[in-house]
Length: 345
Figure (cartoon, helix red, strand yellow):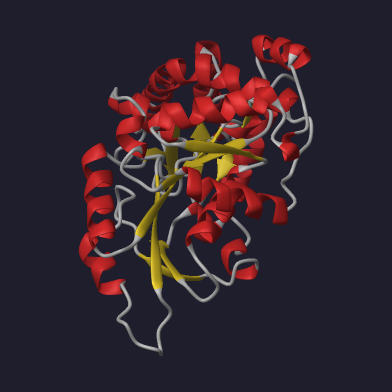
């Protein structure tokens, strides 16, 4: 069976153009800095995000880990949200591997951190306390419904942090979606922060990888950390070639995924027993719940949907997440709505 796979945009496969670029990629040893395709990807990523340098890494988790460890020493503290991907879904790497303490603040419904909460969390100069070094933001924010942060908010946090001697790291796994949703250049969201990680292998369809961007000095530190974490790849230009195509061709079409997410949401609103999360979809994610009139569990409904050719993620006791991406067309959206109508009755 050919499934309509809405579990995540991580399931995207490389486009034919990417496969061709990978086959023809000029390569070298990237650990020696000699892979021209990796170097080009890093330069392109830095240029697009308004940074001095970039570093190709195996995953967003590695990018966030190397980024946070480049900012913080052992025993230092990072302030982040209690729904942040780095806190929830990255295996506690910043603590286990870096000895970095985390202070988790409540994310607001729009995914932001309230500046008054951040200010209250900054540690005093006291030998009993860890040293506050870093604030981490997420854009788009996965667990807050795929919502985006604005340039104004990002600048406000960066100015607040820098005035207090703190740095700001952005987990921008889907930051190009955030830019597309607002109709702005991604630089408006990345330029104010000190470092940013974004994924090539989610909605941008590349098979592997993320890029960490920041100042030249910062990337030099992160490069050493990447090696320490086992991320020194050799002829990685084969992978980087797909990333270049992703940045050149896929970033400009993300609005199509957002439009289909809205179409899917409009269809699901018409299905009795389904309730959309307020504000959903903000980007390419639709969060929908079963109301009290539906006697079935989410697992029962998920199984019935799978039997009808639709895959999705369960994100709560009564909630699903559906993620739109390049490989879902209008017919797929219609099939998903029809499958839900049958599955919940």
